[in-house]
Image (cartoon, rainbow, N blue to C red; front, side):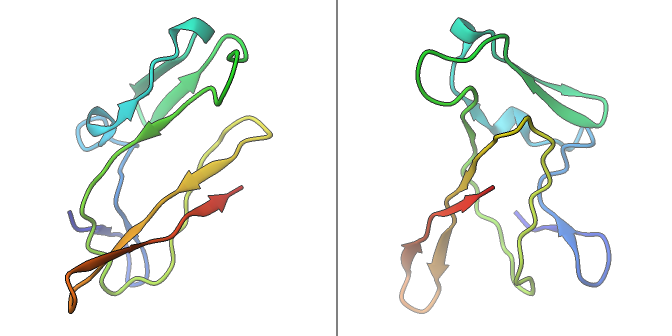
Length: 110
């Protein structure tokens, strides 16, 4: 997967604003019926909501594995409108082309 450039310095890799291009259908959403979790694509966004706090753990866990070629980019910006307090975890795995190995880092995004 290659990012979609929007200008000389920026690109988008998950166009949730367009239902036809959105990658939501490729994501895994952990079940949350017990606390009323609903995740759906709407006109220009992905809507997620829950009716009550879950007994344990987070209200929403969603992930997607994909191979993203970020050549030429050195920053990642995530834009999310979520209730406070919200914690986001991102686990990028970087492929080292010379050695064919992977290295993983975990970042906590608040």
